[in-house]
Image 1 (cartoon, rainbow, N blue to C red):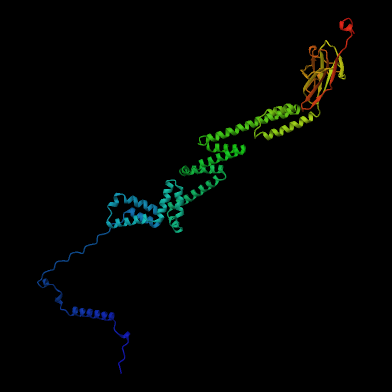
Image 2 (spheres, helix red, strand yellow):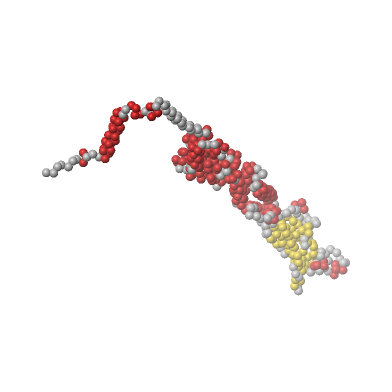
Length: 459
């Protein structure tokens, strides 16, 4: 029957064997040390009575020099998160004479600190913010703020100076956004904000040129209002711009030119309105004269509607005052009722023409011609002249003469009528253009007997 195999766990392991051997060697050494004679440890010289030389003293370790104060301060600033201050301190120290005297271990520390600061993203953001303010570059500030993660922003805010710059950059961007928004709507408000912005941030204001942009936008708006004939609004806008910007602004000549043009239009309007009022007053008494004045005035797009209204009013006044046509009559020898009569062959024929109208007689014309059994002559218009005296006791007194009553006379000389039969009449036209014609009169030369023709008989 085979013997049972030993348990693997009960087998000695190599580590156990090595440990047992080590313990055995140590124990043997101790036994040898304890059993050795006392003089085995003495030097040969001791046996001869010679004192061995003393051992040299153990060298003391060279103490490490402390870190320079500025490097230590820089390390403290880095621990506090004030990386930008630490970097300035380190750069200033590294370029100074003290850096050359550093021991190697401190130089390594300085180099490591500079490398750490040069590659820090938070520090780079702080440097960009500082540069953005130094260069008055708003785009640079916006880009830096937008590139930071939340953790980087928290780390950046540990530096008090960087935290202030972050807040200043955000406020600056908000103010700029507010001005930009106003430039598209309320340009005067944008200009006021821009002027306040310039007082607080003069260097940024120079690069952004908000005031000039707002002024140009106001100037363009005023031009559009002028084109739309909204002159009051344009003038108010330009005057406000002039007050805000002053006479030294670059757009001042354009503003002054626009204001002058608007004032000229206003002056023309005032002159026109004064003339219109005069025409209206005249129209209540003499509408035809008012219409004549109105007809001579130049029509423009600005006054065309106003003139049309006034002309309509004056026309209605004319119709009210001149409701009927004129009346005209011809008197010969003081007999207006006689349409036929006789005249002396050897005397001029004087015809008196009376015309009247409820408003005004404009023109009176007198026509005549001769006729006999062989035919008639051509119609001749005889010029009229003011009557020298009433034609009869029934005639209107000259004191009653006026635009509505006229009395004129025409003279047909002997050379013209030559003792032939005559026919004549008159026409009158009133202010409204109505025409009236008198009855036609006929005159025949008086027939005389022989004695009368010889002058031997008188009536």
